[in-house]
Amino acid sequence: MNEELKEYLEQKFGTPVRIRSVKELGLGGTSKLIGEHELKGFGYGKPYLVEFETGGGKVQEVVISTMKGDSFGHEHFSDRAHILLWQYQAFNKLPKHVRALDVGYFTKDRRLKSAGDAEEYFIACEKVEGAEYVHDLTRLKEGGRVRDVDRERVSALASYLADIHAVKKDDPALYVRRLRELVGHSECIFGLTDSYPPGSAFITREDLMAIEKKSNDWRWKLKERTKRLCMVHGDFHPWNVMFREGVDFTVLDRSRGEWGEAADDVSSMMINYLFFGLLKTDGKELDEDFKGLFELFIAEYLKQTGDYELLEVIQPFYAFRGLVVASPIWYPNISLDTRRKLFNFIRNVLEEDEFDYKKVDGYLLKDR
Image (cartoon, rainbow, N blue to C red; front, side):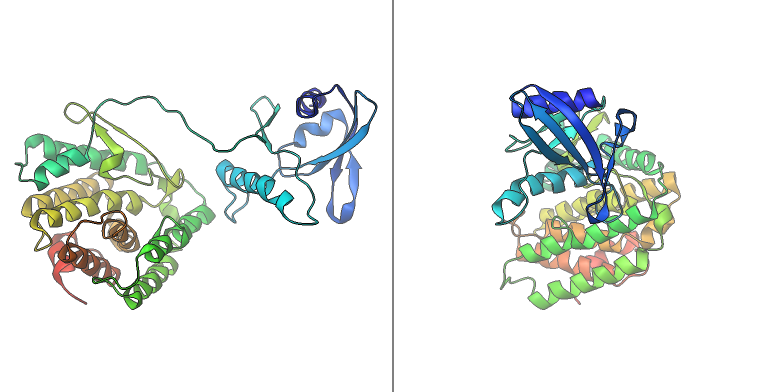
């Protein structure tokens, strides 16, 4: 490890370096001298004091530390990267704060790489051929006939979710975290309710507060169902599915974690059959073709998984997805009737102990 550390310091400081000592720092300022064979601890949440001599004979010291994963929102590599990147940007802006010299990462072969010059991160992905699934729904919304391939694609999407949701993970704290994020994450319920402009003609401040409170009640209600933690996509909607011929498709833009609640993926796709079914009638009623696709999707999913417990946990996830499609920010040009029906759905579903997909019209049409 000394060689990797030496290489990093030479790149960072632009001069030949001789490492004099490495010490593991403990609580209360205590330290322990570390030998070469013990340096494998780098990258496991411990801080190390490194004393080194530059080519000009100047002796310098730096503290190199990482974060340990825990159940307080630091489970994932990306969680810890987020915090360390923020600290590098923020430490030097506060008077009297210890200076941050660099931020970086350990590679798989234990080398240290600087990310200190980073301004924005990016991801590069392969190009995918095909058309977004939303084009199918738009065609149907505009009066197109439901074809065999439409039903086949609904079944294929439900089957795909059944397959990935079959992969389970035993991590109760992570399941609880995902429920907490459903309510409190800035991309989820609280973030969405905060984004609604005051004085909306279709929803009041008190209505949004009631949805938040009821959703949090559901969070507490579901916290014991940790065995449901499974592989998820996290944002499984018609803009994130690319179809080619027939039922051949690729999914895009997985979000918010590898593991979660199956109801998140199921509700994310199913709310769009309701949404487009309302758009087709300008909010007067749920179009029968879209209602049929809605029922086909859930029936196929339940048949393949046998997960009827889903109907007892999907309610707050429908609230989240309903807040998305009713949003004047994401969908500024839909009718008031459509928005009101979607909020009927949110409020009515949150009151149901068991979701009954065969009476979805009632959830949409009944005012509370």
